[in-house]
Image (cartoon, rainbow, N blue to C red):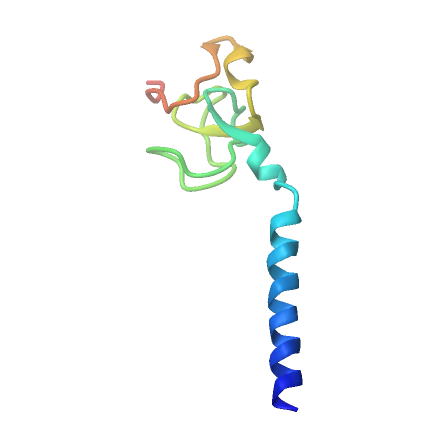
Amino acid sequence: MKTTIATLALAGSLASALAAVATPASAEDAKEKCYGVALKGQNDCAAGAGTTCAGTSKVDYQQNVFKLVPKGTCMSMKTPSGHGMLEQGMAPT
């Protein structure tokens, strides 16, 4: 009986490990933080002074808050303030 339980436990562990390897990358992995492109109140989370989390940006295109965008598209996003940035910029004054 103990051998059967041990065998089942080992088989379950192996199945879990294989499932983890076969799991496709999450949608989060296909996104990147893009600073300076979010509209007022539409940022994705805390990024700098004046923000605490999602939806707290004070102005459009605030350069110290980010929006998650498809990987590789940030730098091509054009705003009235310039292009999107992969690193946090200065907060507008």
